[in-house]
Image (cartoon, rainbow, N blue to C red):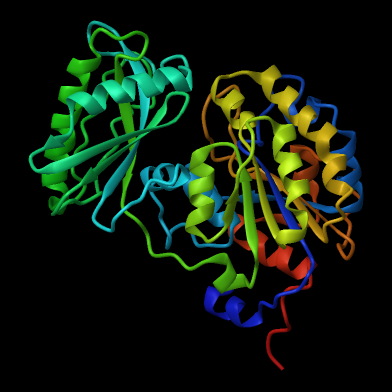
Length: 401
């Protein structure tokens, strides 16, 4: 993509509005009769596709399976290699935890292990948030400090929590403890750089102590840690693109990511209809809206093919509420693919739909992976989506004389 420094000189503020609707993990592969997007009844998305232009995006690079953080960073117009934001920081900022530059943050997943310490459920059955709070209170009471490092624990949602290690000489370059598989033991938080050896020893002691505290709990008798990180230095969307941006997301991590790039995070309910209502209520206040739908990804990770179809159809039924607002540009896509048959993120490109009054339509008939493969946008890095949205909203001036 053209360097950010040049985009910054071309960007102009205008009243036109952009909506980026992200169905997390949208892309899939066929289980015989088609993908969830191909099977779902989506008359409203199909009408948008018929008048818009389709394509595919690679969040990082072809063949590379992305995490949610870098996948969204790319969609927002930032180089995901240059701006690597750890999952721990995203979770912490998503629940408005105050952080200092020296803090090391990590996301925790409560999990279940058997008598041989082998992981049998990486999410402990997605325990209720209330149970998470009880466990965090238990751990916080028993573990406050390790080797002079303060340990701060906070519930996020369902099985997710945040652990913040606060002290001198900490380094976030640690390997995650999640083996990403079942019937194996969790991994050690090994240092990825010699400077992280002290931090590694602190985290290992924290895990040992916490496992003793959780030993009699069910189903969450252990946890897995991912995304050790510190606060990044990243420019805002307002600074780069002259936007007044807002984020509508039910899950804290995505609110955290949005906040890090300068979006105002709007309070919304858990239901998809709540998110559309929040969009309507705040329509006059911003010119860029990031709307995040989580359950497509959750069902993909759980192998719930039918559930993924249901969420896509629900979004389609609610789409007229967005269309009535008449944004200048609507983009519908995923941050990454989460095929239900793989039960996890994958390297497959994302479906992309752009609808705008000045779009060069490619005469597509449906919004689906197959149609997106044929679409006029071709296959492009997700990093290049933001300039396309700005251009179709007439928010970029001409480059050169």
